[in-house]
Length: 377
Ligand SMILES: NC(=O)c1ccc[n+]([C@@H]2O[C@H](COP(=O)([O-])OP(=O)(O)OC[C@H]3O[C@@H](n4cnc5c(N)ncnc54)[C@H](O)[C@@H]3O)[C@@H](O)[C@H]2O)c1
Image (cartoon, rainbow, N blue to C red; front, side, top):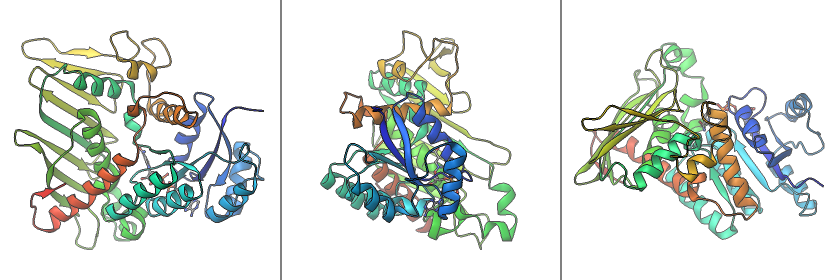
C-alpha cells in the first residue's frame, strides 16, 4: 500500500486560478496522493474535473458535509488525512472549522477567515482538536526568502531600523473603470471577499512576510486606502505606515491598480550593519547592501545558505526555483508535520500568521475609516 499522505481538496477546480499550483506542489516530493474532494459547487463539474486529471471519482463528493460523513465511515488508514481549502475567501473559515472539528488536518488559502474574531475562534478550534494547520502564504517557501529570514535572525544585518514592503499589481485596472465588472467580480464583493480587497488579498501577504522575515511583531499602523470610485465598497490600493517600536518603522505599499504591474512584490529590510532586498519577480536573487561596498547577490543552492534555505532547493545552483517550488516547500514542511518528523516552524506559516493577518486587515480598514489614525495591533 502507498505510504503517501491521503489528500483531499475543496475548490481548486479546473476553472480556478490556484488549484494547479497546489496540485503540482503536493506532487513535488511524492509525499501526497490526491484521493478525493469537492472541486466545484456542482458535483458534475467536480466529477468531470476528476476524470480530466485522472483520479478515481468514487471519493468526489457533492459538498463538505458529504465528504466528512463518507470519509468518517472509512477505516483510519484509508481516510483523508489532510484537506486543502482553496475556495473563495468566505468559505475558508466554515470549511476549516468543520474539518478540524471532524479530525482532519488543514492546509488553507489566505486570507484565513473573513474577520479577526473568526480567526481567534479557529485558533481555539485547532488547539482543542490538536489539528495541524498550514496557511499558504506561498512566498515564504522561496529559498531566498528563507535565507533572508535566517540572516536577519543571525544578526547579519544588525539591529533592524527600517522595513519597506511593496506589493503592486495592475489586474483590477481594467475592471474598476467598468461599472458592471466592478460590481460582479467576487473579490470586490464584501460578502465573498471580506472587508478589504487590496489589503485582504495582497497587503496581507506583505504584512505576513514582514513579520516572517524580521521575526518582529508590528505594534501599530496607520492606513490610507483608496477605493477609486464611490460605488466601489472595497479598497484596491493603499499605503500603511508601520511601527515596531519607538525607533523601528516601516511602510507597506499595496495596489491592484498599479497599471501594468504584474506581481511586483518586494521586501527590503535595513539594519545597522547592512540591508537585504528580495523581489518576487526575480526570486532567486537576494541582494545584500552594505555601506561602502558593492552590492552582493546571493543565490539558492550554495553552501553559504542556511539549512532552511537549502532544504527548499532541489537542484544545484543555477537552476531557478519558482512559485511552484515555493508552494512545494510549504507542502513538504506540512508533510513532515503530518508524519511526525522534525521540522523548522519556518517551513510553513500557520494559525498565528492567520490571526495576525486578519488583525492587520481589520485594523488597516478601521484606521482608514476613522480618518487615517494610528491603531494598535
Ligand atoms: N497563496 C497565494 O499566493 C494565492 C494566490 C491566488 C489566490 N489565492 C487564494 O486562493 C483562493 C482561491 O482563489 P482563486 O483565484 O483560485 O479563486 P477562483 O475563483 O479562481 O477559484 C475558486 C474555485 O473554488 C470553487 N468553489 C467555489 N465554491 C465552492 C464550494 N462551495 N465547494 C467547492 N468548490 C467551490 C470554484 O468552482 C473554483 O474552482 C482565494 O482565497 C485566494 O485569496 C492565494
